[in-house]
Image: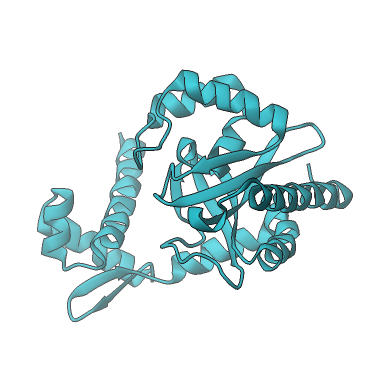
Length: 255
């Protein structure tokens, strides 16, 4: 009973932190209404979180603290994939002039681990740490295509196949066809499947044992990649960069 109570307390604490993020900061009463919990309970949790510096308070408005940024950035810097990919991703963005991103899979979601902007990069409301359904982007589908079938089943069972735009593929059969094409071609293209009017081309990053470690992509306004020559140029750059990251990871001994 005691253990269950402590676990529930942890869940509640993080539910409140996530609520503060979604509300862009809130008073205890507003947050209590949002999470449907007593104000006194929410207030006690917030005071504790403030004391241990994971929540800040100003003018009775609570916000998540920068301790989360400190922990997240420290963890990101420890990841060999990030350390190896970061300079290559920067070069990819510079070469193409576009937005280049690195994604990993975590708990069945796609998580952006890094973003680099070229001179003409599209301005999207996105940043490292953003999570998204894997099936809605070229990055995510590059990862899904190389995951074991049972893991893909688990992800879809838990998260479903929600549509982000009218172009999002929500059919499991159609996704399986795209996964097969991705494995054969070595890349994936999504045309406005997550964001209308944006084309993204992604390639996976694989270990020596062909375990998928993540994926990289370049995104551009569809109007700027409007012919086969442009797509071929982006494809070559993305696949060359993915291969370079794989080689460097293998050379460093990362599996």
